Image (cartoon, rainbow over all chains, first blue to last red):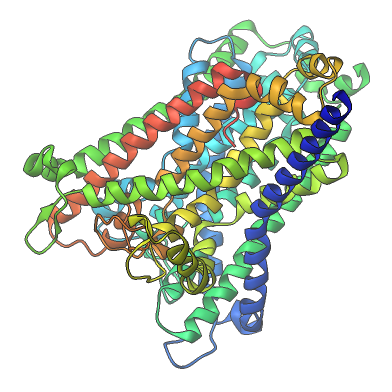
Amino acid sequence: MTASNHRWRKTKNALVQALTLVCALLVIAPLAFVFYYLVKSGIGAVNWDFFTKLPKPVGEGGGGMANAIAGSFILLGIAAIIGMPVGVLAGVYLSEYASSRLTGPIRFGADVLNGVPSIIWGIVVYALMVLPMRTYSAWAGGVVLGMMMIPLIMRTTEEVLLLVPDGYREAALALGIAQWRTIAQIVVRTALKGIVTGVLLAVARVAGETAPLIFTALGNRFWNNNLSDPIAALPLQIFSYAISPYDDWHRQAWAGALVLLLLITAINVTVRVLTRDRIHKNP
Amino acid sequence: MMNQADSIVPESMATAQPPAVRQLGDRVFKWLTLLMALSVFALIVLVGFELWRGSHLALQKFGWRFLSSSEWDPVNEQFGALPFIFGTVVSSLIALLIAVPLSIASAVFLTELAPPWLRQPLTVFIELLAAVPSVILGLWGIFVMVPWLREHLFLWLRSALGFLPLFQGPIYGVSFLAGGIIIAIMIVPIITSVSREILRSVPGLQREAAYALGATRWEVTRIAVLSYAKKGLFGAVILGLGRALGETMAVTMVIGNNPQIAPSLFAPGYTLASVIANEFNEATGDVYRSGLFEIGLVLLGVTILVNAAAQLLLKTFGGAGAKPQ
């Protein structure tokens, strides 16, 4: 009786273990499928032209997404210029002035802000910038991505600053250094790698955003010579090609998706390497 | 350690400054960072205000009827959000039904049952899945997933479960069910990683006590870990729901974009987020655009409520689980 009961419990344990393993594999299966089809359908169109040429009209074949790739980098640049200072300084406040009664609500606000759907950001910036300026623009696209980066950078900055040992702060203050210089030159400098990591993760996160750009950056089939004009972006280009009825454009969409995903994965992997370093050096 | 602290203090900094200057610097810096931190509230107010301002016309014209009417007729300027609310709710529910068991089982496997060498690589893969942009998943959805659903899974479901109204009617591929499945793929990594954090924050003593009683690994998990973490796991699920409701691009590409309330999961539908994505730029006429702003307002209201609830649940559960991603 007890022996068979024991055996049954062991079997049940093994069964659950197998079942949860299957679940975990099912969870990552889509990743494998997506990667497989991106490479299979996209690799053929990833060539020199893809990175150097403008999109071709329907039927001509060939062409590339040079303007969309450049556009994405420009948008991310504007976004980082807006999101980085605000996010980092706000993160400093949360970590260094933690005794304030405001930190709890601010942290809560940032988490709620993180959950606002990206499409909502798009129509808000449309109302805020596109309507008054009477044109879709690279500025509007950069601003919307920048706004989305703020809560992300804020929370990661706070987290890495909290990892800096209090001894550093105390030592600096004991030397008679003003608190703000202690923070700027000791605490932030110590955690700089972590902060950069957080910023990069935020960039990777918004790099694939499409929904907020539809009503702000709009997209453009040519080079953008003026940041007050509509600008192309890789995700936008993928979207408009994907829902088009042309095979040529579908191939371009796959190629664009492959490049975008490799870019995002590269940032993620770099970050992983950076953070591994950080953990080893500052136990 | 002392040496390290020494080396990063530049000489110039040690020189004393007049106290007044130091205090001014401290005050300016503190106010500057506070101002930046307060931008969070400014942004929340800004988002709410702009949506309210944009939807002013529609709010005035339709009132509460907007939420209960299923008419979406841009030509005659009659707008009701019900089909979109229905589509969002149905696709999110399907997504939760698929994603919750899979994610929680995976989180349990990763923290409790998996051999240590397997944990790290699986976690990395799940994080990479979280990094796949919605538009790429949508692209894959259009050209790979939807044809497969149309030619295999849906046919099979109809022949096996066709007695239910849910699985009847013509099969187009693009449908509520396809939308739900793609959302499930998008929210699985979030629910899994938050659940994983939660399970990891369960105290080791809890487990040891159960082991000491002679429990097997699974019994330890069930008795000591899962029951302890229940509330936090619920928070993780609600957080996933928040993401599901606002998911836009991938859903737009596979749900069929047809504003209807249909009993069949094979029928094409529409969601709040995808009607904005599809029609906002083409919306001619002030009332039309205003109606779309109001849809945004509805979506914002719901997602803020859901996310706030999730954060409260995660916070009351404890520190480690409260991280957003």
